[in-house]
Amino acid sequence: MESIFNIVPIQYYIFISAVLFCIGILGVLFRRNSIIIFMSIELMLNAVNLLLVAFSTYHNDASGQVFVFFVMAVAAAEVAVGLAILVTIFRNVHTVDIDELKSLKN
Amino acid sequence: MSLTLIAFLFLSLVAVFCGLMTVLSKNPIHSVIYLIGCFFAIAGHYLLLNAQFLAVVHIIVYAGAIMVLFLFTLMLMNLNKESEKHKAAIARIGAVIAAGAMMLVLVAVLKRADSLAIPSTQNIAIGTIENLGRVLLNEYLFPFEFASVLLLSAMIGAVLLAKKDHQKAA
Figure 1 (cartoon, rainbow over the protein chains, first blue to last red):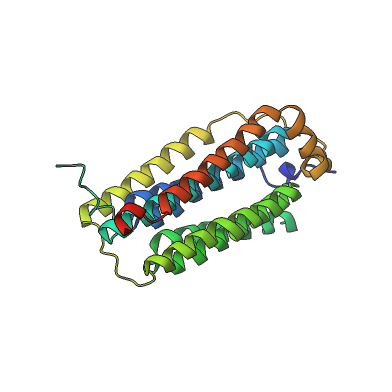
Figure 2 (figure 1 turned 90 degrees about the vertical axis):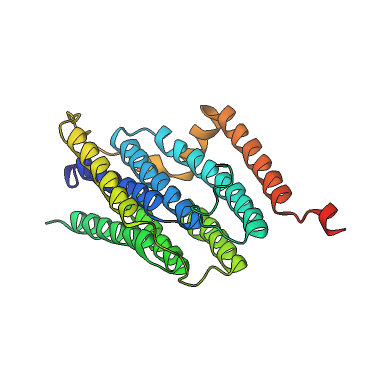
């Protein structure tokens, strides 16, 4: 089968991943709701996953796709623990606004 | 323009638009919905890249499990209203500048990278369950087992954290 990279150059995949990653960065810096910040982190992880799969296909090597599985496992663990922490915080201080959660400061 | 290129451009457009709306929409529920759209677009990219099994797993894990977890948490905390205050204007401008500068650096560096020779043929069988399972359980058996330990500890940690404090309740 003809390689997809004759039609869509690998650079396009690099650029789309970079754009998605930077949108994730923007979300982390821009928002105050910590749940949205978690979602932006998911977006960044997905940008990296997309690039891993693209290079895995590029090199005809399945290792890249196996790494995506590990990234997914870590993302799932991170979300589960992070959201549990957020629920606990919300129960105590009734907000998830990161600008309000600064009691470590003083 | 071939159909593949059109599909790629369409999926990229959807992914970037949904990603931006995730960050910019005021209502957190809308953010979740847009993020699910973005994940579907990325799954379409996986299909284009002949990673069929990964596309299915991506939909199941992200759209099916993780985003449902987000939705449950949002509903649980009653945050499904547009009550979030904005950051200070200077912080927001700084955020946009930082993200834009990061993108500029990434694109400028990667544009000049030498590209390798494109392999003339593509092995379609790479993304099948059979092949991925073989690689996962032969070369990556040890990390695979550790992923299970990680998930178990995350599960225990989440349950411990979210459980009500019994001493306080008594």
